[in-house]
Length: 460
Image (spheres, rainbow, N blue to C red):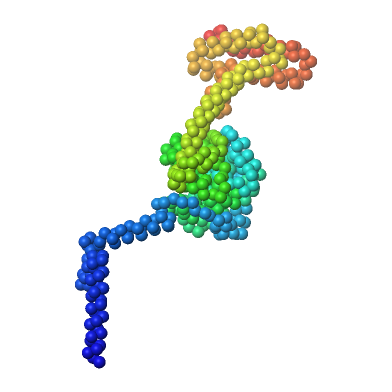
């Protein structure tokens, strides 16, 4: 029995050796139990390498990887947490409140000039039912959203939290803790992680909002401007996925603004007031030629994403040139308007209340000549004498107070003219003259000057 067992054991060992030799000859792999970790290139045959290459090609073609692009379907109820009853209640309170506060701040404490506002209102209020909307804009300051968005919408629209925009924000900035996460979710902000690509959960959540006919606002540049809003950088590929991977092609409406760098400068903790922001809203961007062309059917998904993002970026750059031109023209127009207003005010100061008191064209010329004569006398008098005799006798102190302030802004003769006209008006109201020509203010004014000032100057 023992001999038979030994023979059977030897038989199995011989079979194992034969199988080992066959495998070695087939794959040319040397099996060494004493050195299992040493695997040199000579141990692998060309057939094994060929099978490995086939397996890698099969895996790459069958499964989407991070380096390949494909259309990822997203259901409408993708994120139940954001659409929960608690967050809907918070959004119904927070969104209208913050939106109207920002609207009052921008339109009340600052100045907002909008060109093409009807395009945004038409796309927002009159688009077909369940038609998604994407608005894209440049990113200058950290408060571009909600300040600019709120300034473009009327208060009645801001009260409808359900139809207002969703937007995206970096998770390391807006969702760093539980408090900020709850706040930004309650104002309809979706988290995205930097560097996680275009197929991350935040992008899927934005597409799910578009699939329900919602409005998503995005900054295609991906981050704030690095030069204070002077230029618009190229758009990222993510905006292309939002346009192409939605169930229906959304309306893409671009707008560009300038002036937010003054409202919220870099490094500032609080926004400024008294600034001017100019917004230019463009026409909706059309992608039919990209989506329906023969090249689009043969092109890869990544190239389509890039083509859509490139078109959006070029449109924003063109609008940026136009809005800068509009802002410059408006500033020049405002400066000229202020200059014209100052000239008109100067003319009014010389002509106000002259006609009602009988100062017609002929008498006005005599009045101007008299004032010019008085002004010449003042110029010939030294400052010390004028201060000691002239201004003190007029009843205004030169040492400080309101008199010195008035004197610094107005010529003394003009000030006396206003005083005389006011005195004549009081006389007219008291005595109730029926004819204004009986007052003869020019005669009174001449007598006053001759009795008080010209007499003194003639004796000097």
